[in-house]
Each structure stands twice: as C-alpha cells, then as structure tokens.
Length: 245
Image 1 (tube, rainbow, N blue to C red):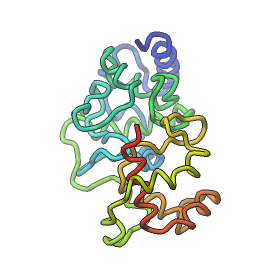
Image 2 (cartoon, rainbow, N blue to C red; image 1 turned 90 degrees about the vertical axis):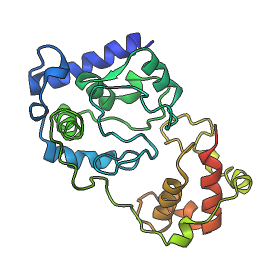
Image 3 (spheres, one colour; image 1 turned 60 degrees about the vertical axis):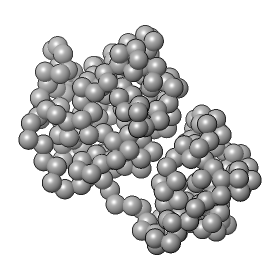
Image 4 (tube, rainbow, N blue to C red; image 1 turned 180 degrees about the vertical axis):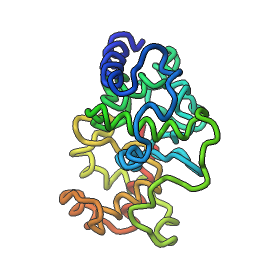
C-alpha cells in the first residue's frame, strides 16, 4: 500500500499547488487553464522527453506515453508496457493520476512510489510543476477539443543512418561487454544516483549512446566510454540491457 509515502506526497503536492490554483476540493474539478501556463509547461516538459512522449503519435518508450494521463489509473498500460513493481503495486492499490497525485509524483517520484524505475530527481518549484501539469492537461480527455494536429515529442538527439538502427545486437556479446557499464549502473535496475539502463527499448539505448559518442550529450565519462564502442558493440549492449530483469 502507498500509505505513508502517498500521504506525505499528496500533502506536499497539495501545499505546493494550493496557492497557485486555489484547490478547494477534488483536483478533478480544476480546469486545465487554472493550473498554470501550458506554454511555459511545454518548455518544462523538455526534461521529460528522454523517457516520455506526449501528443499526436506518442508511443511508449523508456516510459509510457502521457496522453490521457489525468484520471488514468497507475500502471494502466500493463498489457503493453512493462512497469516497475512499485507502480504495479500502487495501481493495484487504487492510485489514480489526478492533479494532486501527479504533482506529488513530479515533485519526488520515489517518495510517492517506492521501487519505481523513474530515475528523475523531481521538480521542486511549485510554479514549474503547475506549468508542466497545465501542458500535460491539454493532452487529456478534459478540457475537450484537444489540439493534436502536430506531434509534441522532441526530435531525436541524433539522426542515425538506417543501417545503424537496423543492426541486430548479440545479447550474449552484450553481456560480456556490460561489465564496464555495471561498475556504475546497477544491473538490478536500481538507482543510487545513477540512472538505471535496464529494459530500455533498444532504439532508445542506441540513440543515447551515439549521442554520447558524437558529444551531443554532455557527460565526459559517457562520451569516453561510448567513443570506444563500435556500432555493433552498442547494438549488442542495447540487446543485452533490453531484456535484463
């Protein structure tokens, strides 16, 4: 049960939003435009796009897509997306993504849901969370007449040649290569200040590693590690970590 973490998270979330939107009762009664500034929220959402998509054509990637998130039960896509045990537990216990729950989760994901794989430090400023929630609200069932004419997901960090994306990685070879990765990243999928890389979609893993290799992603150690790897070795690591339990 989410019990203590749930109560603490919602208390923090309700306090953060109360001064911004005048919460007086159920979060479901708050209209989208009263939460914050959706235009500013679109910029805040850039922090989320390495894992999540939203808008026209959005799909599950590292994280599930966020269309229709308001009012949705936690772990609602369990048939076609592999959630962490923590989110499956809270979904079964009745967690629903209303305004207050989303605000608490975005502020500190691991405080609200223990055992989540969402390796995000959270957004501490209530105003930023309100703007982000206003933006996300515009892709849910209410308000009506959602403008979904254009995709909102950010473009890939690096456009790779089709031949690179088509490489079928050798997972056994990836397991051999993964020893260096595992000195920092926990193979269990746990997070101790370093993002987990288990169960990433292969394409996302490959794109991220090539972004480091081409020094588009700014992390000197990862740039050095990726720079040593061939296209085939990156594909092998992607195949290994995708199915790692």
